[in-house]
Length: 136
Image (cartoon, helix red, strand yellow):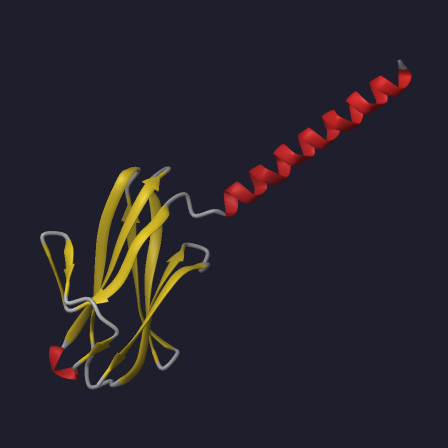
């Protein structure tokens, strides 16, 4: 009987530790799913237009587009724009609790050709998704 109680006690501790560990990891998750993130030429009717990986400088600006799904709670995010790995802009946005939320940020290119990227970050600066693109 004592062995059975020891086994039950050990299993109980393992279950409690598992719940604690899983809860800690769940807090690190962003609380939503990135269904789609692209860079595009424009956004029309809340959909990306001209998504791609290379854009002409003559375009003047590009858009970072995000479609999030299964959003647990209103969530602050940031689009961080980078040219040649140098941060050029940070755009804070909020996605709202629900099944689906679409949002976007635009970036004027100036006269800057070369390697660009836009990062989706949480408020702590954790990179959730990166989209790289080139301006020629």
